Length: 250
Image 1 (cartoon, rainbow, N blue to C red):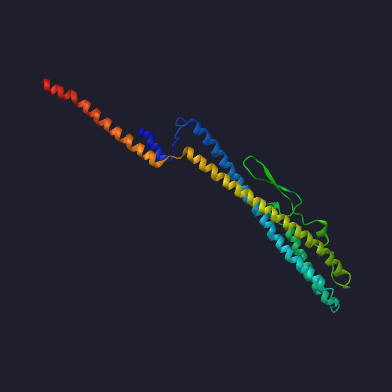
Image 2 (cartoon, rainbow, N blue to C red):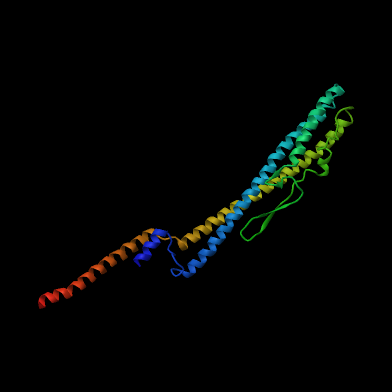
């Protein structure tokens, strides 16, 4: 008992072998396994949140570009502007469109950030998933805006007006995409917090089963130590008695 108490104090666990508490050991193994799976879930959710936040960062840049492009398309409709003036607007317009096209090709660890394919994110230790809807920037509302076919040079009532029409559709689609993405980030954060709460609860439950009560075990150790020392002293006393008897006989 003294050796067992010392082992418990040195390890911090009151179950040093299955024989100490067979049921407790079995339950603890299941809880430990579940917590390990929850660690994996937490990592998956963190990465998914980072993925969505990266998407949002690029969408903000695209939003700024679309806003400037719409401003340019309106400025190009100014009747006091010449074709030479509109040519300058057109250069910036296409430079911004090129930036947007570049953003569309970005990826996160090899996974396309802007694709129509949805992603399934694991949300719990049972393998249930949450669907992250894909954000595609190649839809109809973006198609004409993000190509070099739009030209705001020329008659202010034609090219620039058509460009503005397409830009308004693109901005509308952009707003919907960011709203959906915001909802996705909120949901993923909720699942992550839920996972953290569950893991803390399981850890506390496992601690009740396996962690040693240091105060109680220290008292037990002191008790067993005293008993061991007392027993040793009694054995020494018992061993000395035959020698005393021999002395009397001698």
